[in-house]
Image (cartoon, rainbow, N blue to C red; front, side):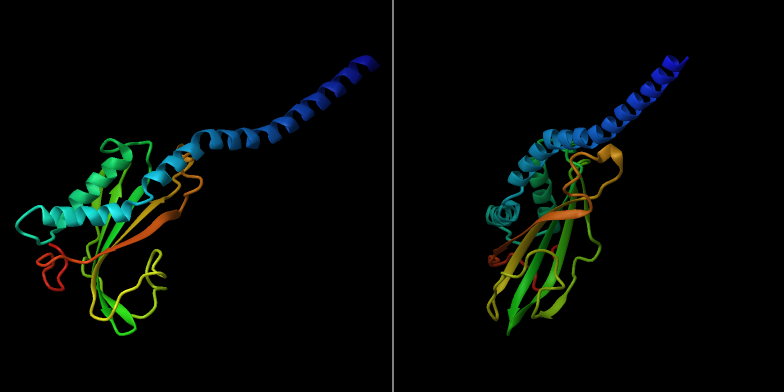
Length: 215
């Protein structure tokens, strides 16, 4: 009888030890899976977006210089955004990329000690579905900006002379965690952004309709 009780106690102890080991093993397993699946994916994505702002700016110049009418249109900006998204994912709509590529295109004029942003076009390319959305307000104006704290992204190194004109492109990749079904590919990005690259080009003659945003 005593031997039976002893075996029962030993069995309970063994079960407790196994459960304790299992509790320690689960986080290690998840972390290992994360590094196996997520890190290479994020590394590839980071490489692909490294010079997106510069690419977008160059595409703008290529588009307007390739035709007689140099006027930049909203449709031009959308088509470039689609093309860049396709370059990242390989196909239109890729479930391996549950991210949004946000592109800000701004017309900036230099002022004394700062600059004025005459208009902003913000295009969001949802890489998972391939759909594009554009902010309703395409004429957002930052009057005589002398500091850049109220602007998204990395503007601290942006320089412009009084009277100078620039088209400034900024690209940002962002993602929001939507539960366990999208746990992977999102852990380093959940609710965050990365990219914030700036690229500035000088508008060519006839490219802009005064201070009006592309239509």
